Amino acid sequence: MEEFFVSFLPKQETAPGAVIAIRTFGDFLNFNPHCHVLCTDGGFYGSGSFRVAQALETEPLEKIFQHKVLGMLLRKGKITEEVGKLIMSWRHSGFNVHCGPRIQPGDEEAMENLARYTCPPLEDHPSIILPGEDDLPSR
Picture 1 (cartoon, one colour):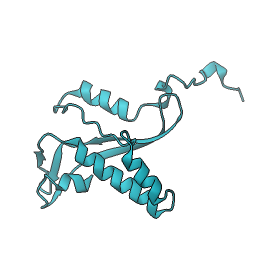
Picture 2 (cartoon, rainbow, N blue to C red):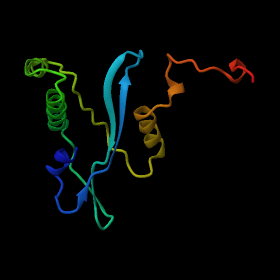
Picture 3 (cartoon, rainbow, N blue to C red):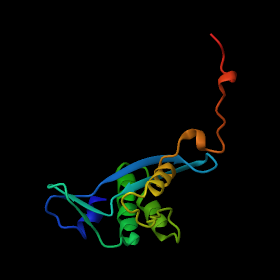
């Protein structure tokens, strides 16, 4: 992400903020490795100030992410060059970046909704049934 943000934020003492949740399952508890990322739409300066960036174009970030992930898998011997090239040739390579609307300061409801989507509590998943207190074995 730093590589992406450096392209439009001044380099002197600027740091973007981000929280990344690594997920390994999809809606149906199938294996579906992906990341949910909450990131600032600008950068913080050493003085504590924040500068909002221009509207983000997601395609460059998607390309950087794809390049970094496939490069790591290739270096670790998890894929071959041929597999990497094959993935790069797919119309839908499995790499996707979505940038929703900006959340304004003070919009508590929007912040909570986004955080809940990014890192949902396990008990909110429709395929998981947690035992009630009456279902637990007594000691």
